[in-house]
Image (cartoon, rainbow, N blue to C red; front, side, top):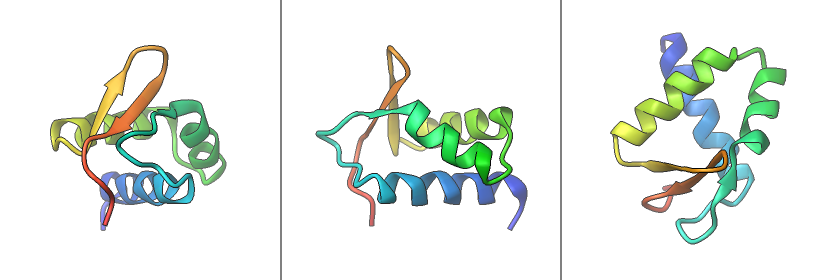
Length: 73
């Protein structure tokens, strides 16, 4: 698995830890702090967020929040 895929997987795992649901927007800070502590860079996290948005998994909202567009498996 390359670093980009590792970052996306870590991001999805963090969303699961936060019990993310389509009806419950998540503050990106709650994801970012944990991933930076796990040695992911801010750039890696942002690229993973943009990738998940382009895959229609999440929607990036204003005020640094995101929303799932479909439940996580």
